[in-house]
Amino acid sequence: MEDEVKIFRINLGKRIAQIRKQKGLEQTELAAMLNGKDKQFINRYENQGANPTAFLLVQLAKALSVSMEELLDFSKLSD
Image 1 (cartoon, rainbow, N blue to C red):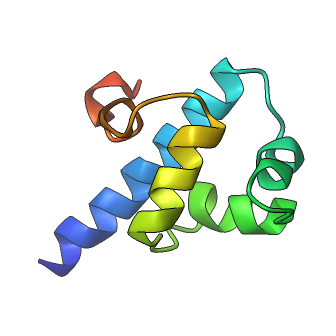
Image 2 (cartoon, helix red, strand yellow; image 1 turned 90 degrees about the vertical axis):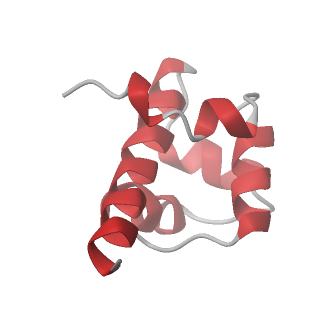
């Protein structure tokens, strides 16, 4: 189970970064869209596998203008 959680968090971070880059946003810009968070906040999720709350996932999807389904669609990750 621990491995599944780790894989989920890594894939989520990759997906957040992928969508952010597709939208032409820098980490600082996305962070600012999340009630004034900082670049390090986004970096923790994209690169360090931080564990987001459900509410943060909703906020990220809204800020990135994607559905939750799209945000969590790891099949769109490139290898």
